[in-house]
Length: 233
Image (cartoon, rainbow, N blue to C red; front, side, top):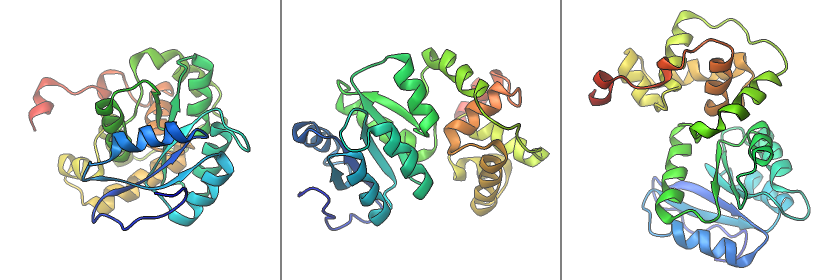
């Protein structure tokens, strides 16, 4: 596939874009994702500015974004993409687990990160997790999340009791249909509640909403962990 091209779409597959300034890195990541029936690479970009134009045109579901690139780096590109395509999830692909990189990625609106040495299974699981709205937030990122919450600008708007219920289930990584089944709501109603929650919390995506809510005391740590009874149903 040539860079920036859009191949025929697989029915029902999530649309992915790969952004990296190294041809071999893009080819390697594309090969790891090839063959997954629910994931389809629809475009590639070699720098952040190219990625921005590609996302504006293709409106992908997910972007795998390198950090260090010429002509608009990965963090700046992530911020821009989240502004023009708020429904697009971004996963940062990095060689470094340095806290400052990861903190800046979360601030930019990324759903999380994967390391360049990740296995195929880890890459595919990260993609599906981000697409489902589940946060890609390992426990070791807790100090970064506290910093992120401390730097959030304005206090959130008032959440209704129903929005708090939706937020509690959302923070456990549930998708909209799963939230609807648990709370007895339609998917469209859940979607509307999630949109209101994001707006009131000033969050760019579900990951940041869960982080911000937890740090503001709207959620207890226990409320974001499944009980033994809830895992089966």
